[in-house]
Amino acid sequence: MGDRNGEGVTLNNIGVVYLVQGDHESALSYYKQALSIRRELGNRNGEGTTLDNIGTLYRLQGNYKDALSYYEQALTIYRKVKDRYGEGNTLNNIGLVYKSQGNYQRALFYYEQALVIVQKVENYSVEVNIINNIGFVYNVRGDYQSALSYHERALAIHKKVGNRVGQGKSLNNIGLVYSNRGDYQSALSYYEEALTIHRELVNPREEGNTVNNIGFVYSSQGDYKTALSYYEQALTINRELRDRSGERTTLNNIGSVYRSQGDYKSALSYYEQALTINRELVDRASEGTILNIPSPPPPRFKCYPPPATCEKKFLPTTRTP
Image 1 (cartoon, one colour):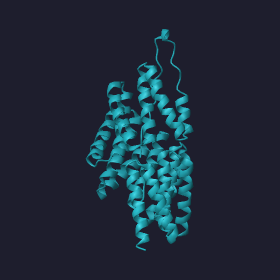
Image 2: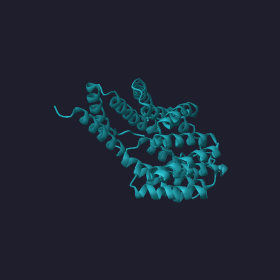
Image 3: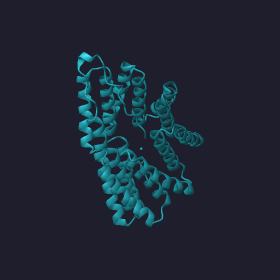
C-alpha cells in the first residue's frame, strides 16, 4: 500500500509549490488529493492544514466566501485537536479575508486573537505575519505612528532570525506608511531596499507588489512616465503569476495615471479591464470604487479631475506540513 500519510504530505506540498507559482488549478487539484487521503487516514491535523491551504488559494483568487468556508472548517479541526499553532495561523488568515474586503475592524478582531495564541506557542513566523497585518490596519486608518511601530517590530524580528523574505516584506510595509504620510523620499528608500531583496531571492509576487508601490510614489509626484514604467513591470509580473487581484490593482492604477493626464480614452480602457476582473472575483467593494470614478469635465473648462487615488499592495501565508 505504501506510505499513504507521506503521500498526503507530498501532495499537499506540491500544491503549495503550484500556488506560489500562480498555477491555482494545479494547486487545487493536488490539495484535493491530499485532503482525500488525510480524511481517509483520519489525520485531523493534516486535514486542517490542507483545508487552510485551500482557503488561502480561494482568498488569493478573491473568492472570499469559499475562503472563509475552508478556513472555518480548518479552525474547527484545530480547536478540536488543540493545535494552537494551526488555530493562530487560521485566525490570522480569516483576518486577511476581512482585510481584503475592507472590513478592518473585523480583521483586527481576528488578528488580535491570533497574536495572543502564537505568542504563547512561540511561533515567530506566524507572529511576525500577524504583527505586519495589524500594522496594515493602523496604516489604512491613518494611525501612522502605530503602524510604523508594528512594522518596525516585525522587521527587527526578521533581522534577528535572518529571514530575508520577511525583511523584504516589512521594508515594503514601512515604505507604505511613509507613502501614505506623503514622505515619498523615505518611501522610495524603503521600497528600493525591499525590491533589491525580492529580486535577490527571486520572489516575483513580492517584487510585483513593491514595483506597483514605487509606481504609486512617482504617480503621486506627477512623474507619470516613470510611474507607467513601474506599473507595466508590475502588470507583467501579475499576469505571469496569474494574480488576478494584483492585475486588477495595477490596471486600475494605470487607468488613474492616464486619467490624471487627461487621456480619458486610455483611462477607460484600463478601468474597464479592471472592472471585468472585479466582477470575475466577485469583489463588489472594489467594483464600486471603479464605478464611482467621476466623469471628465467638458473640454472647454480646461480643468482635470483631481489626482487619482491609486492602490498600493501589501502581503500572503501558506502551510507546508
